[in-house]
Image 1 (cartoon, rainbow, N blue to C red):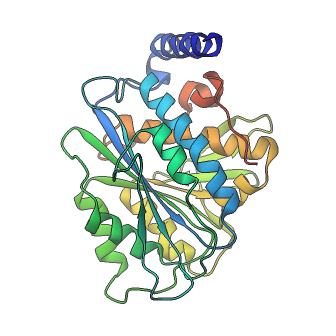
Image 2: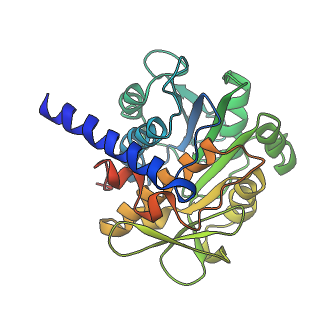
Length: 299
């Protein structure tokens, strides 16, 4: 009970701080709630990312609620799709959340425990296509956000898919794609990710992050990952993130999680036609997740 009271108190402090900081803070929510789907690679190297997902989604839910998203009649919903079987014949599939396609953040955490690491043939485009073919987002004033997590470039499982038609599925649904991929970004070192407007988010060495202009793909990038996923995330109005910063552990991984959650809250609270300017960062880059005492580390 004491921990619950503490959490509520911290949330109230965070909400008051957001309101007091005016234009430099999270803007008032312009959506009622959010539908968030995670489409994740289930190949053998992805165990760490699978472990990261429940905490990240819990922090995202806390950030959205602090921003007024999902606090009314419509709650925030979460879904989980796995892809990356051993052969080209293994198709993407649902991981039910609370026994249904969509569920709560807590139910998502339980569902993520069912992810496997036995695959080795990864087609993220097919995962996105599977989602749009098999799930029904709510639409209207409900934001749709897609998170793709993979450390490989695309293995072509479905020759009928193209960059253009997968991107069209995202844009026609008003969905922003965030790609957490095996790809480096600049300028300079310690860049965690870059958004569609070229803002780069850099680890500050203490678990937070700063924002600089002129971000781009830079350094190592697995195969055709940039063309497959990074460019698509930017074209949708979303961001691309360096999975290796998450794998680094320590303060770098903490910075990654805080930046990722904060920028996703901004994306969801601001319509895709008005991409936010995160130069100040949410709460000046300290991170909603940090303020709420919900920072997670990759284990």
